[in-house]
Image 1 (spheres, helix red, strand yellow):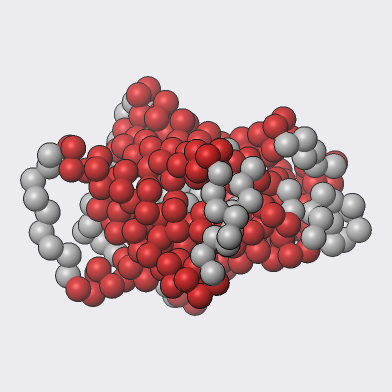
Image 2: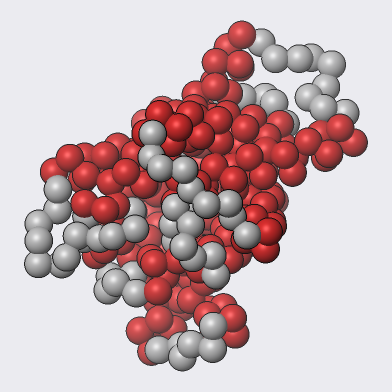
Amino acid sequence: MSRVPESRPNSPKSLAMFIASMLIFGTIGVFRRNLSLPSAFIACARGILGGAFILAFTLARRRPAAERLPCRTLLLLAFTGAVMGVNWILLFEAYNYTTVAVATLCYYMQPTIVILLSPVVFREKLTGKKALCALVAVAGMVLVSGVAGSGGQAGDPRGILFGLGAAVCYACVVIMNKRISGVDAYRKTTVQLFSAGAAMIPYLLLAGGIGSAGISTGEAALLAVIGLVHTGIAYVLYFGSIDGLKAQSIAIFSYIDPVSALLFSALLLHEPLDLPGVIGAVLVIGSAAAGEIQPGWYRKGRNSAG
């Protein structure tokens, strides 16, 4: 996708769309906490509903027919989508075992993981700035988790492990997306979302589906919101806005997502962080933002939202 030259101002419409998408992403933990369904089923429904919404959106745009994707690209997109589905399962499980705030902060260790892997995966030099940002993020995560005796709000340690596992999967998606070029972002995301949903079906069949309880009307409504709003609409707003924004603005405003998640968890779920947790949150989010403050390869590769 093209980008607004850094000398030009951000488009107000694009900025509003981007902020809206971040605020929507920031509420997904609240909705998941009100669902008793298995995480794999939620991930499956999210992928299928979100993929169907974006497919309908792209068809409604009536763009010229795109060329068929090469088999290798299609397989790579499908595999990336499957990893995205596992990422969602782990994140949804993290919400079950710890607070939304802690799960979100674990998830936002993903930029740090990408930074640490870049010398191995891309043979890129780990600069002093990136190394410092990574160390600060790790220190912040220690404070948030409470493992250093700070008395954080982490709860069950499994929540932290699930959140960090989700961050690792998301980092893998970002890295793999960097290797997929020349594909329209909407088309790429549609394939990945359907693949994420499809990858969950065999697991659900082996695990007994959603159990004998079924889905209530309220749960079906919440599931539809996660699939259509938190995925379909949010992704359309996200991809529809980035062409009208400066790269640096995208990096900065992306952190509305975790900050709003922390605020929503405190206001709606009454999950406050103690002082060490707040300091840790500032360190995690601040270090990630500092690591991205200049346009670079990471944003160019991140053309699929989490």
